[in-house]
Length: 366
Image 1 (spheres, helix red, strand yellow):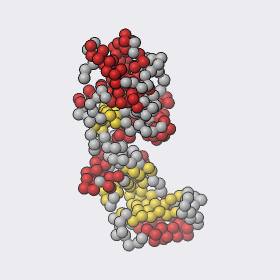
Image 2 (tube, rainbow, N blue to C red):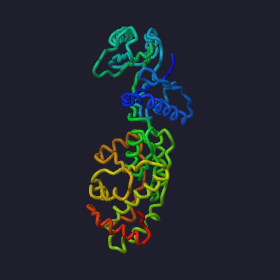
Image 3 (spheres, rainbow, N blue to C red):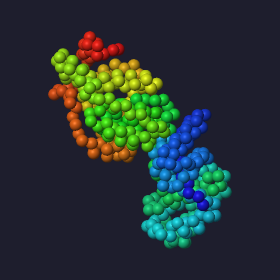
Image 4 (spheres, rainbow, N blue to C red):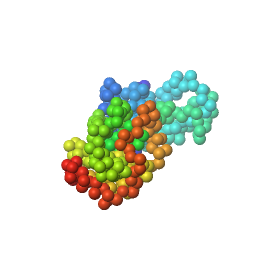
């Protein structure tokens, strides 16, 4: 008998002629994730499953790899060895109920899934006297027949799903140390992108680094973090807004400047767009009108994976991926440039007047 990890994927199976490319990338990413923990593991593809030759305790790492739908720490054995294995492995358990969940991954094995369920279930009842419950069992004994061998397991851990990271292009993530933007980054990682993170620092650069460390658990390659000093970068523009009597435009202008900086870095890194944590209507810079204005200043796509989510949905994902706890530990500092009142429905005319003024002061190009 051997300890292994069964990996299941979903969307990759629908890729037709490109399936092998996606599958190979997922295998590569799993190996990389394990290597970062000092584990060199063989990973092979067979009959719609990936089999990872690694100890069970590393299933938690494997399940975080984008593209993985679920994992099960399993034992590989001949079908005839299952009763003896269960006799030993289950002897210290006493569940209120159980069921056998058997699957033939292909139809080559001579027994049907139902026959396996009945045979192994009857053995457990006879040997332990446990009650069968097919609807809500306390213990599920999983059996998958793969290449004529039985893989037995007792838990299935949910993966993040999606596609293998780094199989698409690169994007620049505008990331604060709040709840939203790290979640936006995670959602794009699980759609197959590579990320470079741009952070405008207000004294939280160390925390931004820790958030990137969390996101790295879901990335096949180390995520670069670029830090720009918030006050130094924005102060000249805020000074000009004060001179113009346009301080209410501060939030829109700051977001516009962030996008311009992200575009500049995107060109340097050959990235194909920008990711933000914008959620429609959540703050002043995220009204429909202001999002339209902010988007107009850059000439590349802006991806907003949270645009239709409410805060509860975003918080749920942040808790699941491990960034919410970092947010709650952060010391709160309000933006030093935030005005008393803000523009919530900016106009193209108003923005253009401000940008023309910035051009006259050599603060704006484009």
